[in-house]
Amino acid sequence: MKAIPESLREALALRADTNLVPYAGGTDLMVRGSSNAEYLFLGRVPELRRITADGETVRIGAAVTFTEALESDAVPALLKEAVSRIAAPAIRNAGTFGGNLSNGSTKADSAVALLAADARVRLQSLRGERILAIDEFCLAKGKRDLGEDELVTEILLPAGGLENYSFEKVGGRKALAISRVSFAGVFCADEGRITKAAAAFGAVSDSFLRFRELEARLIGKTIEEARELKPAYLKAYAEKLELKDGRVSAEYRRTVCLNLLKAFLEKFGV
Amino acid sequence: MDTIRFELNTRPVSWEGQASARLLDTLRRDFSCLSVKCGCGEGECGACAVLVDGRLINSCCVAMGAVDGKAILTLEGFRETPQFAALNRAFADFSAVQCGFCTPGMVLAAHALLTARPDPSEAEIREGLSGNLCRCTGYNAIVNAVKAAAKEGLW
Image (tube, rainbow over the protein chains, first blue to last red):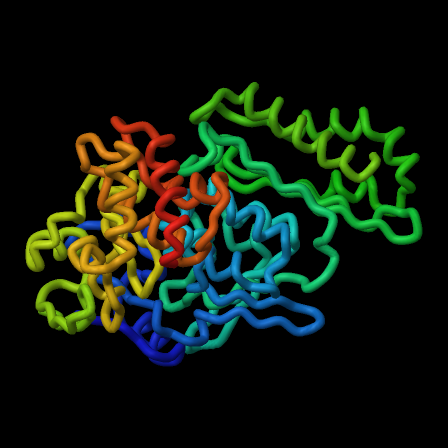
């Protein structure tokens, strides 16, 4: 069956009526795929292919490629830095935000940046829509909160407040590397007081990690107060980061996570 | 059976088969585009790279349903162009080819890069070729060849 819808309505109807596997860039699906697989090709659905921005929100269609995002003036620098580290040009020319979030990996580089940025995911079906935070959608490795009739249609990012950030990817080589540890941080201060110190970790656990209850300890503090708190703050993260061995050891993962967190705080004077 | 229509090396073609079939296999088996090589089969080596609507894409990671209505360029089509002649000369001058398995993908990656950036820095060349693995020539000869081809001013 050749399922190449030309509108979102048509795509959602096919999603509801069939068991076709949603296909955007193909870069993960085709590696796993068998020739008997049946796909719902989303590349021609205009609603999924555009980037729009108003004063409050940047909306990136689920089938927008990483290269298209890198070429867009509307996409925040944090997200551009994260996707510029994905694979190599030919993969970035095909790979999409919807695919990177949905395929179930906790090594998805775009997801870590989106989590730190407080981005949300729009899911649509013929029944209606849901808007979820990144960590509400990405529940665990291989597990996403996505109904069988739903499609990821858009990523929603705040249009401001992402200027002060860190993104770090630790991999085996510069290109075509799968993350061993990925880190994204977003820092905001207003009149000398910290209003945001978001830190997200990827590739180190069965889910993306963000500890909002720890972040809250820095909110409202001056930089000097935060600096005094820093040893206890890093210790609290060390206790939270109870990791397991994976491609690299638990100890390596924790050490790198804490080093990246420390470098992030120091970048902004803490 | 599905009918997929696309443009291959500037000619319109129609293909019958499963929409989930790999573009790589279709190009080699049904269109005799044997420049397109299967190296790793998972998007990591670039030996199967082709241009889809002008963008470099690994054909091992593309299903036929995704190329309906698109324009595909393989080395078989690109070799008719003056840009190919410039890259061909430069690759020969700098001994940038040994076994040749990676070369079609490498040349198309170079063409895609030079189309976007006609006068690239060395770092940009290395970035542009970063998804194409070569395991015999070594990258310096290839990078130097691309630098030399860029100087011909054809992009």
